[in-house]
Length: 365
Ligand SMILES: NC(=O)c1ccc[n+]([C@@H]2O[C@H](COP(=O)([O-])OP(=O)(O)OC[C@H]3O[C@@H](n4cnc5c(N)ncnc54)[C@H](O)[C@@H]3O)[C@@H](O)[C@H]2O)c1
Ligand SMILES: [Zn+2]
Image (cartoon, rainbow, N blue to C red):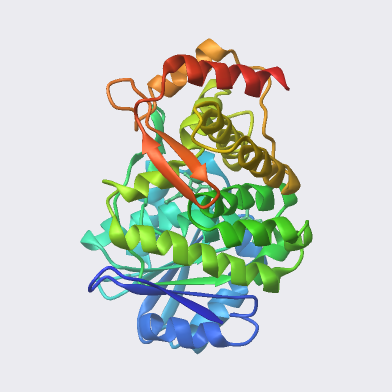
């Protein structure tokens, strides 16, 4: 088992990663400090709870929980709204959760964002433990303490920063994760490698497609990725500087998702196109070697991710980019890789260069 510490003063916590946390019984010891003698509410979705809910319930009982209740809702982004949060809090109230109780999120990023949001506001904040079950949640949403829900007006518009007490990542859960969801997670893993870690990039290249099945090897790469993201979060929890780097591929990716009205590419896929586009843009501006941009695109394809998009006009994509919530006065902030393993945030990229890259990304589709 690998342990990664997220250092945030008194709010510091450990992320534990392996492919047998639950089968080895290690999960009991990891949960006991928070679950012993208290009421626990498991928050999960209709896909994940039937697969792993019972296992978690039993583990919590062995860890000494005084009672275990559950709030389970339909899977997917369409559940990620305030009414679901209200439902979770009402179930918590009916189950008698008090200020000493615990919320445990068991699921992908949607479950994690909502479990932690509900925990952060129920009785002005009760403890939360995260058990991410999708690769995306292990690589991305399970680290960093951003919580929240969508409004009809936009995604993730309401939320809090709220750090969990512990995160348990068991890659055994990924055996049931559909391949497309695995690929979505790999997009964010490749993002971390491009941003911070050349060796991780080389290892992902060398792994071929074995990581889709080799959950033990994947666990060690998940832990490496957590170290990278945890480092950024420790240094810049509120996204005032360095944490913005984590938006690599996202300014382009969000524009695609928005133009497709969230019914086209999935988030990780749109980010993959975005990472490839950012690399192309950087090469076009002379900031990244063309061969490195090509290697980045090839690695994304190796992990069954798209690097081009069809059916969107450049004008619509440019508009969507200008209205991105992280744009400053309509000027998009773009993260550009400078080499494999190094990147920087730029606000001075000429509009024509961005347009030209959108044209290329569309042309090849
Ligand atoms: N808080 C953050 O910092 C942060 C970062 C990135 C993404 N997010 C959020 O995360 C969400 C996306 O996360 P996601 O891709 O995990 O979405 P998700 O939670 O919808 O999970 C994707 C699908 O996989 C299913 N699933 C999850 N684990 C499974 C398993 N082990 N076996 C079988 N099926 C499983 C889910 O039921 C769902 O159908 C978005 O809402 C996004 O805004 C948050
Ligand atoms: Zn993302």
